[in-house]
Every structure is written in structure tokens, then in C-alpha cells.
Amino acid sequence: MTPTTPPQLPGTTVHSFSQLLSSTRRGARLARLLAVGELHAWGLSPNVIDRAEHIVAELAANAAVHGRVRGRSFRLVLGLDVTVGTLRVAVSDARGDRLPAPASTDRPEEAESGRGLLLVAALADRWDTEPYPPSGKTVWAELDVVAPDRRR
Image (cartoon, rainbow, N blue to C red; front, side, top):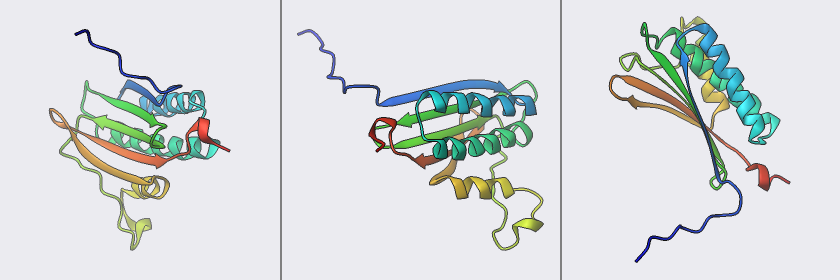
């Protein structure tokens, strides 16, 4: 019996993008620019692109500043599943020992750090962290989107 190719749905249902970037402010800026270009190419709405741009900017800046290990890069991954209607932004760095913590919502203006994660939490529908072996972490955020081919 010969293997058969599974049936394909019309059009592309999943888009993905991955890029390794230097753990510098310049790398963080490039992550934002690359993400915006990719999301435009995928045909997402300006509102989704704007939200994702801010999320990428914050997560990439955190990776470059707080997750930096000399000689190690960070990775930006974008994934769009149009079947489910979810855009996932993930940034992985080499510092698994430094987990992000948003500023206290009681008085965020007094916090020394973590205010950017409040922005991520406000813009994303979901966000969290997970281990990135061997010793790093991934911070991800998801946005619920209307697929480009399903917009009215």
C-alpha cells in the first residue's frame, strides 16, 4: 500500500515566521520591523498589526535587555492559524532564570520594571511564559483575529 497525501484545504491555513536576532536594542527594533512587514504580507487588519507591533516591541526589548546573555541571540516567532483565528507572537531568550513579572496593578507607576508587560496583557488576549530548553524561556502572546479571507 502506498502512502497518500492528506487532502489539503483551499488556500493556506497556517502562516509562520521565525528569525534569530541579536540581543541588542538594534535587534529588538529589527524584530518589530520584520514582524510588521510579515503581518502586512499576511493581510491582517491594521488593528491587529498595531497591537502585535506593540507586543513584539515590548517582548523583543525585554529579551534584549533582561534576557541577554553575551554571545546568544533571541528568537522571534510569529504564527497565524487562520482556521482557529489566532495570531501567536513568541520571543525566546537565553535567560530562563529571569521570568517576567508585570508591575503591580495597584501602583504600576511606582514599579521599577514590568510596566511593559501590563501593556502586553492589555493588548493580548492571552500571554504566558514557558521553558525554552536548554536554559532559556519563551514569552508568548496570542491575539484572536479574524482571518484575512473571512473578513467582511
